[in-house]
Length: 171
Image (tube, rainbow, N blue to C red; front, side, top):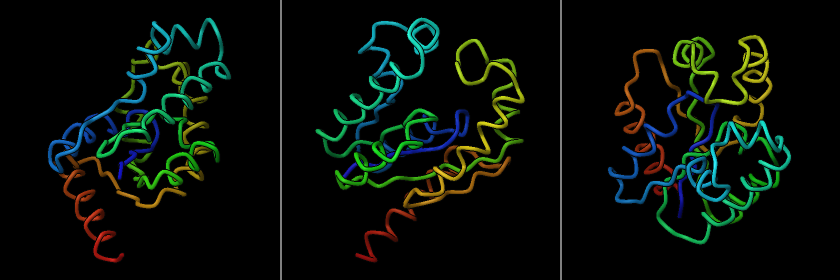
């Protein structure tokens, strides 16, 4: 079984994912990093040169490849889970999706000034609209973990572990 962390950019998927993987004895995979190795450049540069549609094809391939391994904690990109096909890849492989739910104010505070590295964070109002648009997708995850301004990555990991254990006990 793999655990897929989903949510908007800046919610903490990578930080939480690394700690979670260590905590439960899984390997950590940053999907964006995997894609960058596949395409040989940064996601921002690829987005700029080839567009989102081409990027999403590589993203789907990297996601499919992740299902070939077991015991992974995968930090997905902010848009990965916003596709029924990608959700099917995750859930169809027996993966568990976990929504790392940080509110807009938390995200905005974390990402202020980081637009050069994030293609979808070019202007605040566009990013804000995208954040609220994507919420309906993220809410389709199997588990939702609320992140508060005071939550550390370790706090979030404890909540994820408890939720995963709760799922295991329920089956």
